[in-house]
Image 1: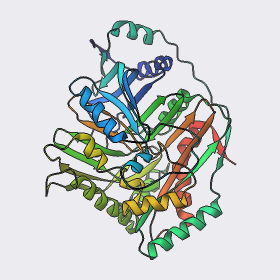
Image 2: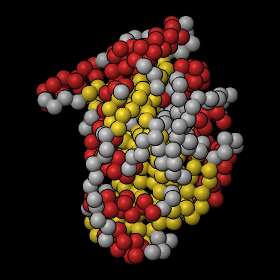
Image 3: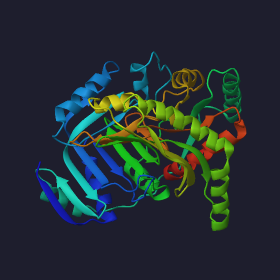
Image 4: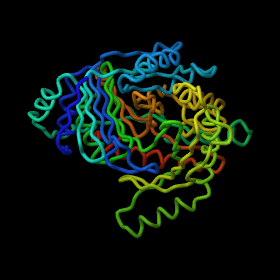
Length: 429
């Protein structure tokens, strides 16, 4: 691929580039919105990968081996982009997923792009393509037309009453010692409801800019994500994971907003939830790391986003020599913040109490660099859309512990839903 560097790039150019990408069957947008998280801003702020020069699609069997082989094939060659669905867990443990799936993402998909646009932290652009100048000219010529989304109505797969009943049953499992934390999620959906995926993405970015935002199109399926959470990152010989547990709303009044931050920082319940998952993550990273190298770099960090304040912890380790980078991901998969602990029993109970196949929700989207460094998010705060069937949904959840009050957990789910409802111009009926 030829590289073509250019001038400082505006937000308008980024938007035009996203519109230009619509002509391709496959593309991936990663954007940190210049929002720093606990590991600060990265060298690349924005990536747009389009077209398939090479690709793999998971089939539900031996997908981790397929993934490893694809990374090996392109090592030192090109950045690779893709996603991992939650249901890849079934190929790690003796688990299954038999619930309805209205979206239909494959278990795994990765591709080597034909064209790649990267923008660094200084606003400088690099176009990796044999048609760099032509692509830039096409993008510059695009006219941005702002559209208002038509109002839509969404249904809850689980009623509030049923939700409360299930939370109480999950608490019984905690009392009995089956699990000590479980991430229980519910679906909101609309059938036969066409949306404009890109305009929805633009709206969600404006309403809720986050450091791990992404937009992915695969085979008429779309994921529109405002994720604030990193699952796992490899930088040279270091691994990092940054689980989120602990959420509180923002307030318009600055004094009240600071009070909410203090409430979150001092909440024994939220800290207990966070610590349980930090312990789980430490164990997950240790499986791929040098003995004694796992460290908690920050515990109970409070980070503020446009919609909510979050409690984020950062765990790091030194990767073992000889460990395949995909093994480091598989050994930590799926992320503990979306399961609970102990992980396998939590996933069994998730299947028992949830009513929707999670699919790409609580999976992961990210990239591999040519040197086999990688960075992957957690697919939360995300809208999914099947353009063939016009099925649109999102899922939200919270960590259930012994101290959970079901009514409060439901309110937390609705708080997490707000940005997605606004982006869709939707209401729950």
